[in-house]
Amino acid sequence: MELLNKKVLVIGMARSGIAAAKLLKTLGANVILNDSKAINDIEGLPPGEYIYKTGVNPDGLIDGCDLIVISPSVPPGLPALQEARRRGIEVLTEIELGYRLCKGQTVAISGTNGKTTTTTLTGRIFSDANRSNFVVGNIGVPYSAHALEAQPRDIMVTEISSYQLECIDTFHPHVAAMLNITPDHLNRHGDMNGYIAAKKRLFRNQTHKDFAVLNYDDETVRSMAEDIDARVLFFSYEKELGEGIFIEDGIITFCLGALKQPICKCSEVNIKGRHNIENAMAAAAIGMLMGVSAANVAQTLMSFEGVEHRIETVRTLNDITFINDSKGTNPDSTIKAIQTMTKPTVLILGGYDKGGEFDGLIKEYTDNIRHTVVLGETSQKIIAALERAGIKEYTCAGSFEEGVRLAGEAARPGWNVLLSPACASFDMFADFEERGRVFKELVNSL
Image (tube, rainbow, N blue to C red; front, top):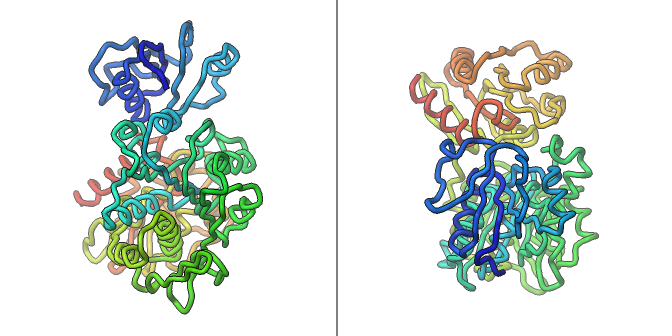
């Protein structure tokens, strides 16, 4: 891919856009940056000579461009991008750009929930087995940040979202895993069919020499096998499979062709809950398909402590345990979090509206959910769902800080306070990570 002296426009100057700009500049491109924010408000912008255009679709934005690179948050249907395609200007996502320039091997993980845990765990499996790897993608480290650094022996362990999959062209993971599909990002994709179509693009460039790791227990994911050219390997928590990764007599077992290997007992997996056993099975499958031994996989599964912002205990104060699940950005993720609660719990719920509904979540409330603190843009939708379910034990907070305080006041000794908003964070924070950090700061200041 020749970029020397090419005029390249990068739209969206968050982490992905900044990484793309750095990569392009390294390869000698003339880089134009575009964002709705002023250039002085952008953190991490690399030094160098850039043309900077502020605003959404300013006049002449695409004039003279040889290539356009967009960040995941930029909708591919923007009028300027449609016009670029009409003019024959190629439009790439940041992850597609990085992939084209990378010499390393790629494995990829997608799904509605569990991506970050599974991606992190997969990277740890490789690291513990002395396999050089970079954990990249939607996890917070752009693919482009390590694309030029990776060598043929290195593995790019890639978390990839539906936003990033919308515009891939040549992106081709040797092993690709789909964990689950539940409603999410409907404001971006229009409806579930649009969301599923974006997710299925993960497998579009795979061949019979590749592997697709699919959740057998998820009907939507299972049905994807019909349209995949790669060799499909299912994983299942519920069913013993003839081939795949499954639970036999309480033991996670890997079976491929004539090879059948026990890995470890479910009870020995360090991260708890059914959803985490599923994540562990997917990560184990990826590791073993890439040549890691069952013994090495087992060692990692038994020691891995999970990821920040996912059912993370912050502190216990006055016998009340505060738990940070800011990564719970949709109802299904929050359902999985509340299913792990073994004590009475006050749930902090609400945030940015992605177009989802909350009745299904409320129906999954266990007896342990004793009180709900509702906040954010989705407050009224959540309150309406609570009322329809006949639940009166809730409080509405005017701010995030007030929500944390009210939750602490509602909890009694021996209870939990669980932040698992079931919503994105963009109405109050830059991302779920900032929301989680602020929650921990507020809890630690109580």
